[in-house]
Image 1: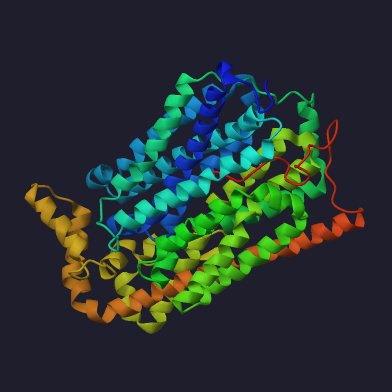
Image 2: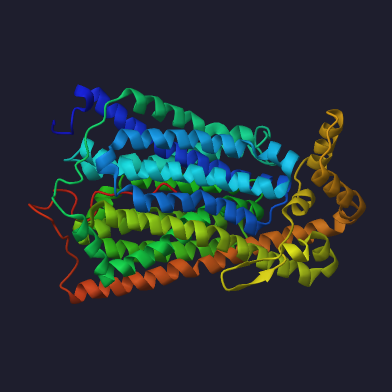
Length: 536
């Protein structure tokens, strides 16, 4: 093993190749996540999903990660890095096959089967991401044992890097407001296969180093025993909030901001991701110089302020300023939480880290995505019904399609297909995309009962009232998104209070200190714990 790390397969070139493959797994995850956020509107308009249903689909893209990361760390040191990454590669490809089959499934089996197709496609995508995440952190730490923080920070800049690539591609080719031309959503959605194939080829070719997970000699029982600490349990609760506010919000943010500033939703998303990308290259030095709990208080506070301001701002410049504040706030939340756990509970090893990642992702998938979708449906439908009960009845889902969330009441959200029709931004006006779909089916001699039913509703009910309905439906949808962000701002505010309590606890205990298993503290990693952000 050389100074920088083991000479995997006998060469520094191989070490770099393995690191690059790890970086590509995060690029693939970020690209897929960004494109999915851009095509949510297309899915709602094409298949008739409500925001709550779309939230559940995006949740499927997070739940799988949470489940996998909780278990994968238990056996990676026994199985090895390479087999796990090969399984992840296969699952990434299968997720693409399943997701891209949505339209043929819809044409032959209807919306319910399509929902399952997209949900499980996103679930497999998340499982693949979770397997990658479980491997790449300890792998890179093994490759560069004396420069862990430096290279882990560089590694996880791949996540916002993927968001930027996916966001730019989506801005150019997704939706009616695409800057270049609108493509069928399947084409941009397949973009993540490029970095997937790159990392897959490298993984097949290279020889990987052995795991060093057992180097400290900590038993599995000692790892489990860490969960008896009230502090660790409290940190897990707070990290569930981090998952809700960061990843849950990111599943919706481009769609919501697009309704606030037409044509700028994805640009704002790319801008926020760029802030994260740059700052994560400097995360190690920043966190090293600032007490991590103080940084968490500041980050949560900025996140809360940013979300509330985005939901409240009218002027474009204020939306951009608010997005900047939100991006600054969320950048360090996830990695700093992992750093605190690494500092204070080193005996927990991969198990405590896996629990943090798992609880964050499960919260985002089961609570964040659906919860924010529910709030949009709740306030949008309420606003529309107050302004025009007739319009509301035209655009609300049927009574038997009502949906609730946790203990909150069931509501009749707005039908995604009908709203998509009235808000169609095509140059020829509302209903243009539907007319093109009907024409294509007729030219090919095909029939689709759902399309025929939607077209009949549009011709008989929607189109005759379109001029009156469009402005109030548009306003209601925007109002729903704004209110959802305002309510979401309560979560990081609660987190900030929790972090203040932790800071007071450490002050009472004589200050924040890193617990070291053996030997001296690693130079340059006093606060970071050598761990960086998630695969959202």
